Amino acid sequence: MNILSVGAGGIGGYFGARLVEKGEDVTFLVRQQRRKQLAESGLTVKSIHGDYSFSPKLVTAADQDQGPFDLVLFTTKSYQLQQAIEDVRPFVHEKTIILPLLNGVAHFDQLKQAFGDRVIGGLCFIETSLADDGSILQESQIHRLAYGEWDGQETERMKQLQQLFSGTKADFVYSGQVDTEIWHKYLFITVASGVTTLFRSAIGPIRDSEQGYDYIRTVLAECALIMTHEQAPISEEIVATHMKTFESISHSMKSSMLRDMERGAETEGDHLQGHLLQLADKHKLHVPLLTTIYQNVLIYNLNR
Image (cartoon, rainbow, N blue to C red; front, side, top):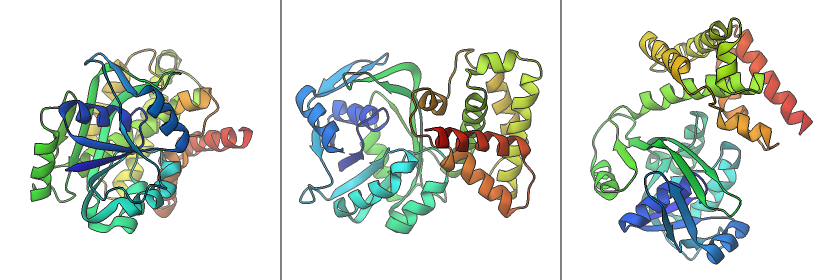
């Protein structure tokens, strides 16, 4: 299968590089400035799982004579998605598999409207950053990508992907419950990004503050309540598991949204907290802490 990674940043660059390292045919769809950087210096991954450098195959949206591709990895930020969809259309054929790796859930409807049942479920767990020279830094043990059909069936295309992904230095995992995994991650990152951005702090000082645990627990309960009303697969067990994670996670953990705010960048607040508040309004739910968290995001955007 020939693969198109939409982006060559921390996610697309990392997982794409691991596939190239294995010997797979990967092309990176990038903007002109990133293309120039990668053409000059190559793509370098610096990871505790092993470093890797190579000269990547590159295209921009203008290179519509390339492709089509059998698998497309969407690794953009949510606010870049609509443009990315338009950029990708010329590279897609009837049986192309669309594998999104964005946070949240709202993007799936957007992608399904554009590409129909070619869209499968997908998510990833990884901490990466881009160095000033454009190389990708990956310093944690977790580098997991999960994928699967929405109904949990192990279809022929799932078998093709399992064969494609096997033998890489990253964890590409087929999931028979990918929808559940997506909602569970959405719940956790909405709370983690929400409380850290509201207080402009790593998670440790928030936990250490008076009533800090109670605040995190209440935000978690509000988000879980909304998802439950939306018929999402959220149980009391996963809420308790997430709370234990918040109790044990590194004192210095900062959400990626907080890091975005610290450097004055655009955030995914509309896609995460904003979308969840839309669902709360739909079900006429009162969620004051989540409302405050999102208001903080709105004010940050105004100040930008």
